[in-house]
Image (cartoon, rainbow, N blue to C red; front, side, top):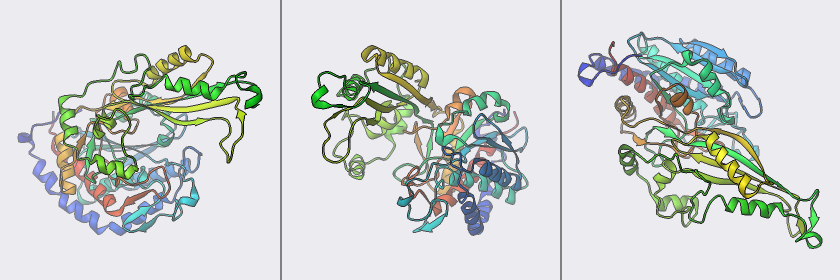
Length: 471
């Protein structure tokens, strides 16, 4: 790797950054062909949960990367293949890894889509299609940024690796092992991911981390079949009550998770993180109106930004058993199931937390079956990283305003693969609108945000290249 220079020694900076307006003009003059190519990409389904279109789309996007001047390869995994592409700029240049995923969520329910999910359509300044925000449209903007830089210059300002996986929407089950086995192919100075929405205010942002996630299922059983509640009530075990009491033992009325050792590895925020959180604009009253709620979850004195960045959660995703049709049915069900997830913060680990929950279940309700459904560790990069200034400057150059700095987003991405397995700092620079409707019908991306994403991608690589000199 190369070492960052200080600002005074950036002799190449004016030349590099001074050429960006020409790149922006190229992007603007190619709006229609860029949209047409994005539409073609979006029209190819690639649904990892159903195994639909994966081989076709991995080959498709590898071909796109080859045609713009990168050297691509399709690397098999135990599941869906990975697409890797590289372009060298020189040993004295930084290496930037651009991560994304070519798989998308299933489009169901289809009857809720205004236009077909794999027939991209523009309405009221937005592109509607499955995957346009999550994440095909965003990483395609990065690819077009690379193409635009090459169209206007003899070379790229950085060494670039494009890394697209095909299993993000099913939890990236093979990504960690791929990184361990192919670390040399992924060696980089930093990782940039364009995924998720910008800040809810509409402001551009840089995210420095994500919460992890661990999912599990609880299965309780009673008699061999459903029973008459009058004939067998007080006699046969009641699985639903068993789960209700078990779940109640896991979280108290103040919102504190009561699993032994659950909070042992929750890090206190740094002064820089607290400063960044305090600078984030948020309107709690507006958020409550948008959710149609009168109050947030307990505890009531915790701010909105703290809830999403600093604290873990436990959520009951579903509680199932017995009869839920119209009218009444006096039945005593023989089985009950609860599906739950936990969102994790640095430095918690998914396996360790699942171990603690399993031990709790064993103590409180030993006859309930505990089933692990998978997990993903959290990730965090320091806010005093030397890459922060060029990233922030690049976003401002491309979009006209400084980005907000978000210590950790509430959702989960497999960034731990880069930060914890490969030891590479990872940053999120999302391009999508806050109401992109990813994972649900009518997923969309504002047209202007797509083009702002292309400009931003070009600016990021340029500003990062300008901060370096030979070691």
